Amino acid sequence: MRYSKGKGWLVVLLLGLLAASCIRAPQPSLPVPTPQQLEWQQLETYAFIHFGLNTFNNMEWGYGNTPASTFNPTNLDCEQWVLTLKAAGMKGVILTAKHHDGFCLWPTETTDYSIKNSPYKDGHGDIVGELRDACRKHGLKFGLYLSPWDRHQAEYGREGYVSIYHQQIRELVSNYGPLFEFWFDGANGGDGWYGGANERRSIVAEHYYDYEKARDIVWSHSPDAAIFGGTVPTLRWIGNEEGVASATQWCSYSYGYDTLNDTRLLATGMPEGDVWLPAEVDVSIRPGWFYHVSEDAKVKTVDELMELYYHSVGRNANLLLNFPVNQEGRIPAIDSSHAVAWHHKLRETFTNDLLQGSEVRGSNTRSSRFGARHVLDDDDTHYWTTEDGVTCAELVFDFRQPTELNMVALQEYVRLGQNVKKITVSYSKNGKWLPVVTDEPMTTVGYKRIIRFQTVEADQLRVRFNVGKGVLAIQKVAAYRE
Image (cartoon, rainbow, N blue to C red; front, side, top):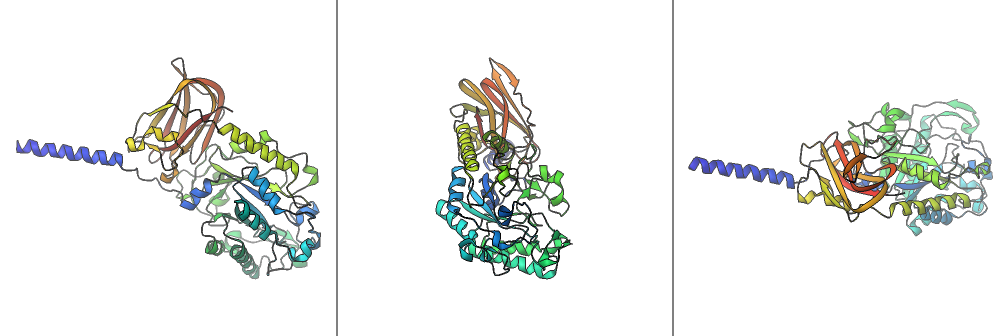
């Protein structure tokens, strides 16, 4: 009897340990985002502003010899930019404080090739400061782009330029922060004016600029700033400027000069990567990045902007949409009207979540604390998760009445990592399960994934997840009809 009683206590103890493991949150699958990276991903859409000497000389890449006197906006209004961008749903804006031609939009102490030697406000203007102030007034986050390449600077390619570049960073981050993102462009070295030398200069970017020190300067004043480019980024370029991210999109990556310059890896991420490096899609609302009057009839339409959204945010990447400012100093009306109408279309499309009010059940659940019902609420600390070792599980949603839909939006609880490698979406009609018809590869999820398919009328919806690594943790599932 004593032996049996002892064995019974052992069983109770084991059951207790098992129950505790199911109640306890699962272990994260590394890598995971930092709080700053997660906050950056939650922005989803924000704006680029390209404005400078190129605007007034019908150029994309200035050579560095265009006189500063040609920069002369006649009715510049940074508040108009910000109000336009806010109406278009943008959460922040990144300004090209200096492009490759070396012309600076703030009164820098590092060069005379700046706004202080232009006719704008008789040399007393400061567009970086004006835009920063407008962003603060209207609640947009502010970021800066500072080209490492400088085709005007005589010292470029020599040791002295690196100190100049670092000083420019220091001026910007100390006087205009805090910044939510800082951009180091990838275009580096080539032909230029270089103080009148008119020659070609080449550098090895990963060594020349001392990007580690440059990042530390940024973070000394803006510790939460996301970093684009260089050798120590916190986000990665998608490998193109067409606004299209790969359908398979991992946030994990591994640092290295070769990997950070491999467009194939940049496009998809690396499922076995050891750092969290989410993707950013940069694209312009016009064919060019700077304003050209010849492109006034080539502004992207609302439908084209919707496609950009689906191929960026809908594929687990942030969308950085560029707005060229014209010679007057304003975002043109046609660009503004298209962008605002696009935002209205997005709100119209994603306001009515068809899964709200449905009954949901999971094929496996870790415990009631992590129940399937959590995927229907908007609390980003809630999620549905399974028991350890479960590599495939599904959610089934029962509609109250037959419902038409053609889109499913999914989010992993990425605080525990990105783990889903494949999904399957199907629907039930009159008791028969059928797969949705789509051209979209149903692979990774990550922070956000949107799957579009031919419109169906469904009694039930089923989403099946296959986990590639770690545990399954789903934060949100929603369905819509566009």
